[in-house]
Image (tube, rainbow, N blue to C red; front, side, top):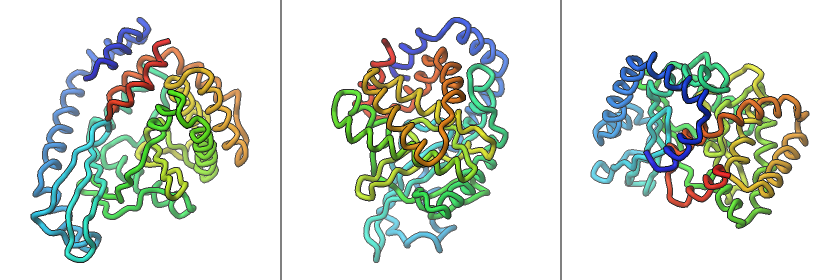
Length: 318
């Protein structure tokens, strides 16, 4: 764990810290079981032969690889799944890169217990296979509505594993980092206007994403498209105010006030251009979330994947 995790741990309100500690004592055996099961799954899917067997099993979905070229790059930062990029050469199509997500039991474990210690919606379909099914179904539905999502290459329900196109792009958190330091604020404002428009379109389709941290959106500059990438906790229940509040709290926690106000205004403007903005409901959720800033920034610090991200967390210390 990095130093930011422990710095935020010190900022956690005593009442929240006690609730978490008591909950942790109560669920320790189940936590150990979920961690062990997840560790075994991760170990299996870090093996080169497992990846090649997956490609052989879904040979109709992949270009045939040059076996000797196949290798994996595990990615840090995911908490509810294990992710990696698979690289290989093909005789006809050249170099290939595939983004692979392995759903693990720890994801369902966090979602079962987080609502007991902090403001967070209750996720009903939180089992490993259920989260896999939700991810695939929502991805397909949003794609059919014309929303840009990572293209699905192969999905294996028996293994709870998806392989999608790899999009080498910045996520919105990284864009916040630059904007927070004074770089390209105007560009960031335009992108966050697009984020508001995107969430409005998703909500209009009858879905809420729930985990709307800026990490979970990629900006494809060459397509001028914003791409949501995490659908496993999506819900058909009306949680649009939560989606917006959770997104906006992370922008506020990671930026100085003036920049945050600009970004917030553009996000709301983008959303309200397509769908009515629920100011009272969003503010109510934000007020509930604010005392738990340290907890959610602890979780965010576990997702940190590069050194430049450190700059964005400094604003949460004020």
